[in-house]
Length: 109
Length: 115
Image (cartoon, rainbow over the protein chains, first blue to last red):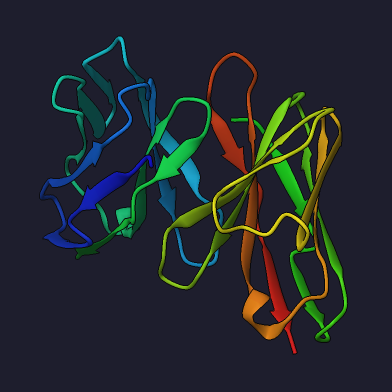
């Protein structure tokens, strides 16, 4: 069945450094790749997404890249801040959305 | 982003009873909604896809007779956990897809505790 793998499971960075989270997907029909941020006890919030006809997208300190041939996509957060600390989920979607296992990001002040 | 509400936010029920959870898209019409279950420190597990006006599509391993889904209107989907047992205790989250765009927005979740 469809599968999304996400790495690393935990990531600790110093404030101001960059953080990179990587995902791979198995369903070649996937055409939409959202990223969600979930703080403890709260709902996942859509932070950025990319569609299959685009290779890269940037929104302020956040960027996503997509390599459809390799079925890889990544989230890049630059100039990290303590408030970026949360769990981040990647997902791959066609008719339904399959989530990665999540990355717990800690940004140390 | 679009707004999705979910009620109740918390519910405690006794084993054997049924619990209904509502998911509403407040500012858009959602032909497709999704129901997820999330265990502590784990990812979102898709339980079923709810399509307005038709039967829900359940993921493998999810009992359709236990988790009843109804999507009676373009803004409301309900999940009923029937004959709940302690192992059904979990965080249930719904999401609604914006038509034509693929974006999904999540409700705030419902924490179910079965005693």
